[in-house]
Every structure is written in structure tokens, then in C-alpha cells.
Length: 336
Image (tube, rainbow, N blue to C red; front, side, top):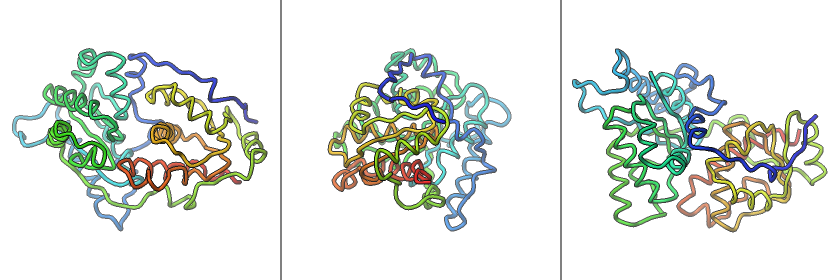
């Protein structure tokens, strides 16, 4: 029987050292390998992606700790996996991370920027220098300042021999599209793009293979309480608006600790989001819930409908669509 608590009572803090120690793939990718990635035969780019990732990893064979061999000067220090959500990019990134020798790091874009915020830029460079591989998941940009900082950071690390791989729903030359138009920002984007070999992965969202096309909404609060009680482990139940307010008090880099150890999160009175800042925080929380495979129970508007048409037509469209995909998967089985 579940232990019912409130997400609002969780106020996690993380030091720079704790953030650095957490830079490993999410638990759901513990078993991810290139061999158990299942390419969709209808999309040849998926099988091609496996071979490209394998070739990227092969450069580590024979030692060198991630340093490039002089006989291959044309080899770029980075591999960029671009594609829609649910095509297995994170699986491939986690598999590549496991193949890298020596000291390695795996984190989301926001976790790396949080690390810089906690330690400072120079201390972060010092910490990451000497690593053979840096994996950056969800390379999606909300702030041009963060982009410039990350471009500088990746440049310094690449020059010192660290190899880099990143995933995103948007190719590097289109990052920030529909959001920022400042010329200095665009120059940073081009500089970032030049460091990566770009690999496009096509395909359908694998999460839809085993889930219905819409997020499950429970009939009322009584149904939510009953569904929560039937689970095991710790479950939180709160009003949707209260959770949104609480997310505003916790840095997104700490959301992983906010939801850590939970088996489910209950949300009462879900409604269409009107504020884009709330929406982006909610997306970040959904990402961490999905990483930890925390089930979501909810009443009100189905969670795949919380982002309005204006949001889905804007510059963060792909973020919202990814969150919708993940929410459908996380609510699957809630009505059982």
C-alpha cells in the first residue's frame, strides 16, 4: 500500500559536487547498449545511426583517452543526434557513454548549466578537463547566455581532448529558431554547429507503440486517491496549481532530486497552462519524471492537452510535443 505525501514538502538542494556526481544516464537506461537498440526497419536512418555511433566509439580503441589521432584530423570532436522525440536518441547516447574509456559525464543541457552556476565557469572547466567523453542530452535552448557559455565550455574541452555527443529535437543550425534573433546569438549557434558531425534519425515515437494516443485522466479526486492507494512506495498528491507554484521555487536542475524515490505523482485539477514560464518548468519536471519512470495520476484536463494551441505553434513546440509523448506514457495504466 502506498505512503501518501506531498510534493510541496520536498525542497531539495544540490551542491556542485552533488550535481557532478549525478551526471550519469537515467536509471531506465542502465541496460542500454547498441546491441539492444531496436531500429525500425521502416526508417533506415535508425540502423545507420547505430553504425555511426559505433564508428564514433571505435575511435577510442587503442587508447588515447579520447584524444584524436593525428592521422584523422578531419574527425570532429562531437556527434550530434538530431531527430524527433521517441526515436531512441537517449538510448544511443547512453550506450555510447558506456563505451567511452576513463572519466565520463552524462547530463542534460540544464544540468551542465546548473553545474556552472554552482561551481563557477573556471571550476567547471577544471572539473571536466581530462574527461574522455561528455554526453549532453536534450540540447534545447531557453537562454542565449547559456548557449554562449556552453559553446565556450565545449570548445575548451574539445581542444583538450574531450569528445562530445549531444541529442536534440533540433539540429544545431536551427537551435533557438523562433525564439531569439540576435546576431551575436546566431554566431554562437554556427560556432557550436561546426564542432559536430550531425546525424539525423527519423522515425515514429516508440512510446506510442504500447500506449494509447491520449493521456489518461481519472474521473475525480476519489478515483485518484483510490488509484494512488493501490500502488506501492511513496506517492505524492497535490493540486496542479500548487505544484506549479512549488516548481517555481526549485531550480530545474534539482527536479531530479525532487521526484527521486517516488513511485507516482498525483495532480488534482489539471488545466490548460496559460503562462509559458509555468509550461517550461512543467516540461522540465515531466522530463525528470520520465527519466525515473514515475507514474502520473491526474484529474481534470488530460495532460496531453495542457499546452494550448498558441504554445504548440511557438518556438518551444518540440519541447511541448516531447512532454506530451512522455505524459501519455506516464499516465498509461492509470485507469486500470
